[in-house]
Length: 275
Length: 255
Image (cartoon, rainbow over the protein chains, first blue to last red):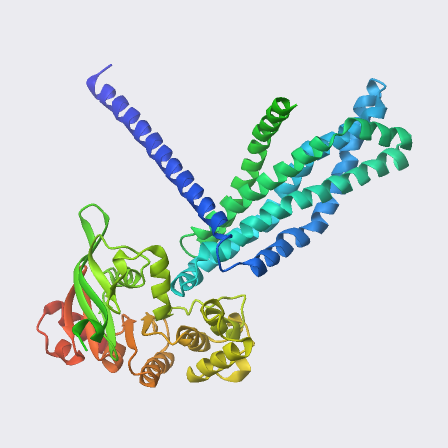
């Protein structure tokens, strides 16, 4: 290898190492910043002045206004999943297990994950866009110079409302999904109603439902943290708001799916340890 | 009255660096007296906005100090800084009104946040008074900021800035991007507001030299993070500093 080629290879390696290191540094800095942002905002909710009115407004926005889409998605997910599970179990002559398997799948996985994804797209996107436009139009600066803590006034009610609303919406999703499953299995596929409910009651534990609700709360925290952080740190004009919204929603969805896997294992380990 | 209390703001050898060795503010010394209008002018990128953020306690200096009403804001805890900000009223460049609140609610907001001793009716009365003082017609009070003109938004922004009867009024580029008629309206508004409460210190950050001469008791010109010239407007006309002369000639020609 000639000297000039060696120099170019070395230069390329240097460039790659430096770029990777800088990216890693930025990542660590951003994660650190987000942790501080989350900790400060969550704590500030318990300091005076109480932001109960803002919390209720956010609960209405995140919770009430998501119910319709959650009900719609939950019903059809319950029906679609039931049909697939039914077809699978029919091959091994075990269709009586359709109800419990659907119930477990909905309560532990699909309920919290799909609810998280739906609400992250709907409310999370709106949060990032709202805070982003407040940032670029100096409304957040205005709050600060008026002696109002913007994290306490804007971020904390959104985060806590998401943490509380998501498990409730997950519960709604679980309920309507089972109604959808019941409708398909009993009314369309003409399965035995007593067996459907008996088997479901036999196999579905309250711990499965709790697992989904805990996941819902964690997903609520994650998407609200990512979206409020993105909105709060928006730079530039309208384009910056668009970028913040886009990045907030995409990252929230990816994180919900990744975290679901780890939470599943973590909760399983916890149940085994406490059993 | 001692010297400290005569000055609403006293900036002493203020330095700010965001990256090592590169100073955006490089030893600013400036006094903003009570009862006077001081205008800070300068070319873009000379540190006006950074200086303003220091005065408001949004940035901490690398060196030097800023005394607000005799207290050093650069040494204050976060909670004391927040409390200190209640002495400020700020009119932002684009008014920065909360777009989900009506004009009236915008003015009521700082009162609701900081005057828990007042009843709803009292807060409403004060908001009406400030809106009237800013020259905004009552028929606009229940409109959202997006439904009123730029000039009305400025008036509402000013009414909000006045809501807590601040000791220091700050105008951040109040006439940037406005047409000459609206510019004159805003200048008159600044003058009439100042005359309404004479012990208030008014600080205007602007590019507009014509307006600076018209409304300013004192003008300070920033360049390269330092105060290039500070004094009554006439010292600018008499200055033989080439940069000042260039700024003055551009400002006068523009008009």
